[in-house]
Amino acid sequence: MQWRALVLGLVLLRLGLHGVLWLVFGLGPSMGFYQRFPLSFGFQRLRGPDGSASPASGPAGRPGTPGGPSGPSWLQPQVPGPAAGRRRAPRRPEPDVCGPGHWGYVLGGRGRGRDEYEKRYSGAFPPQLRAQMRDLARGMFVFGYDNYMAHAFPEDELNPIHCRGRGPDRGDPLSIPGTQGLFLILPLCLHSTSSNLNINDVLGNYSLTLVDALDTLAVNLKTGVPPDSNNETCTAGAGSLLVEFGILSRLLGDSTFEWVARRAVKALWNLRSNDTGLLGNVVNIQTGHWVGKQSGLGAGLDSFYEYLLKSYILFGEKEDLEMFNAAYKSIQNYLRRGREACNEGEGDPPLYVNVNMFSGQLMNTWIDSLQAFFPGLQVLIGDVEDAICLHAFYYAIWKRYGALPERYNWQLQAPDVFFYPLRPELVESTYLLYQATRNPFYLHVGMDILQSLEKHTKVKCGYATLHHVIDKSTEDRMESFFLSETCKYLYLLFDEENPVHKSGTRYMFTTEGHIISVDEHLRESPWKEFFSEEGGQDPVGKSGHRPRPHELKVINSSSNCNRVPDERRYSLPLKSVYMRQIDQMVGLI
Image (tube, rainbow, N blue to C red):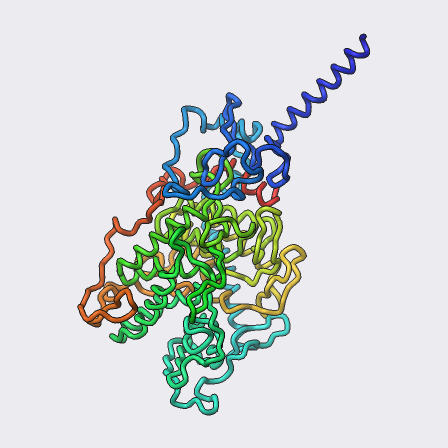
């Protein structure tokens, strides 16, 4: 009998030790974020000092239902209806629940003092270090630009490994045989180009385009769109001309350019789903049928949303804000998954997924690197708290790989597409979040990005595309947006005294990173005709609508700039327990 009691005691002791390890090392109710066991999945549940835990959260923070699908809440479908995705104001925590004792408990006793996140990111960023990073960013641009001018100009881009140019745009459009007199040429900057006529754009792969550097606008005035051209275009390509064309019209006093761009935007808007209010990512411009039915925030849709808001900021046309508000509401209703509040509550962190535009159902489990622009757009509308959370997710991926893979599968915790072409979207959001919060955390993020680029992408004559973010192999290409956006936002992040930062709200960036002046006269249409809903011109004159502060807000936004108080200036923008969750989500820890 004694040996039986001894064996039983050893078994109980072993079970007890497993239970302690289960709690102390943060394994929580699941072995990890994505393993499919018949338990609750998501990150470890946040427990209070009394050991209580809330039910697993469903989409948008709603409690899960018994018998529902296992896996993270992002996999679970949104609940249709007017209340879907509506983010309520964060619940005020009970006394002592979110104090130091609570977070110390969640972190396994490590939170009584400053944890590793606070030690690394909190506190002031020394002025000497800021100046060093500013000079490093400037040197990065100068090195890339000088090599481009020496080895590639006037071609499109630089092959930085073999030190030569690449791209078809050589010479002048007027030098093409038989084209003299057929083009309207508007030289705007730097140098002219020739073969931009084949870029997939609003007119279906021909005739009307703004290149990245805005160097030449060429419109074929004789032949128009060739009959054998590609009739499919992405929503972003067709719907992201309004800012530049609107400026052109208002400076010249000719409504034609803005009318063409605005007609394209309205045509796309009228094709959105009647049920969800979402748009797809590829459309046939001749039939109006959606070829790509995926609705997300990345490739094919990103700048469409961006320019609805920025055209309102620039021109003050109220319909642009109304369209943006409606689009943002649909995004919150159908794309946003995870807990309701970024910095409070339980459940999976917020994430925006790719869904079917007609049903709102999940289409895949990846996101692309272009989606990293969205926190910056949320800053512009005042949804800063949500921007903080989403930005932290992309930064966690960067920390793991030293770059952003073109596609990242959040269910598999691994890249789907491995290359990184020096994209600027994460840097842009980092810069705008720092301008909104003045939190030195974002200077640390910028420093991480700068050092990663210097370490992994610098080659003989510039900076090279990463072919594979894991083994860090490179491709012989330095895209133009690396100089015009990535380097620019990094430099501005650390250049505190830059005139752009001293001007208040006088300047805005285009989707290609060009600085434009927000002038009052751009809000007054210099022509009498205005644009009717059918795409024609209304003979009744209408002055530009001037935005008022209370109008620049978003339906469904649960937070605004005022929700980031001064006392958080030198604390983490996101509680360390949530940062740890996100790092676990991407397999960083």
